[in-house]
Length: 477
Ligand SMILES: Nc1ncnc2c1ncn2[C@@H]1O[C@H](COP(=O)(O)OP(=O)(O)OP(=O)(O)O)[C@@H](O)[C@H]1O
Ligand SMILES: [Mg+2]
Image (cartoon, rainbow, N blue to C red; front, top):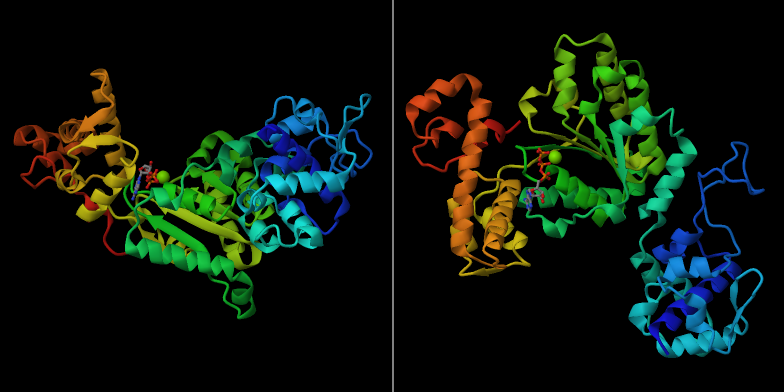
């Protein structure tokens, strides 16, 4: 009997048990199943529409299995053929539904073929088997642990889409969707395991995940000024990645605001759209609201900007005041490369400032080991490369590695050497120097006269590869 049969029988059993047991909710269904049955937000002609003509988001019982739903949920291309030989399955030729004629037989058949690890991924069946004495001893899995391991519905794209569609008019709110991007944790491709963090950063992130876990307690004791973080540091030091990784590791939707999209283009609507962004976040909560380029706020306030733009920014600041981790379940994370440009008004809205410095020697070595973990490199000495890459960020190191890999590929090699890496570092240095020249603008003369391109980056050090701008960014604020 093939795995396909097992997959389809599991689906049939699960839908049947779920339909009967009303104490189960969507978080008892594996994500691939509930995706198939989740409805919400979409225009719908069925009779359970509410006034807006839209179905409220959710999963309605009973769950019926057709060839189509079974195929989508299990990835088995011919689900009926996979189980048609079994004595306990049945198909209605007319409606195309597949059912269990003898659920008891199906349960026994399934229980004989499944192990703890597989069962643990299906809270519905874990509960069912635990409640039936004849299976009491068969499995060593509790309902609670299965639910805990199962991804919550809020992490599913369908859930997010359902909510957004329910709430926003696609055409009318098109501008607003330029301003904000919502990603489901299942779509975020970044985990804290992919990042090398400083001890400081780790402690702060620990603190915040504890705070999230114990929101009720904090609310009870009246501690509300928690849950607004500002990530501060030069480009490429992992600010965005860390915020995304938090979303993935905590299974929270990631709502990103792109402040640079608040441009004169949409002036009339901007304040309204900022408001809406925060509404989105509250609707999707618990979630992470990430506001990148936060220095934009200060720049706008201080400069001679259009009044409507200033209004938008003031709306933003007010919205930030009115949102709370404790009351709204929204964790706010701001990020900036230019902390020096933030004015007090912006600065004081955050209760924790987390510094993202350029990585030091040891960190660079760790980052190098991490990002090369699936590569083959002869005579690889991360410590040595770390020493040769002073002043480079995590992002720079990734670029160096990419260059080395591509370079080796031109010689049809998929095994790199330490030499390849060193060459790529050198290449990167040249690139970086050009970039800095461009940025230096007024200092152009000094650059040319000095003849030593290494000076481009910090104007002083004789070493050809010092790009250490740390003193520009990383001092205490
Ligand atoms: N400490 C680190 N450990 C591992 N990878 C890192 C680290 N810092 C940066 N990177 C990698 O560099 C890339 C860029 O990082 P990211 O976009 O998070 O930087 P950023 O601080 O948000 O930059 P910017 O200020 O330009 O937005 C990502 O692929 C990230 O994985
Ligand atoms: Mg970023």
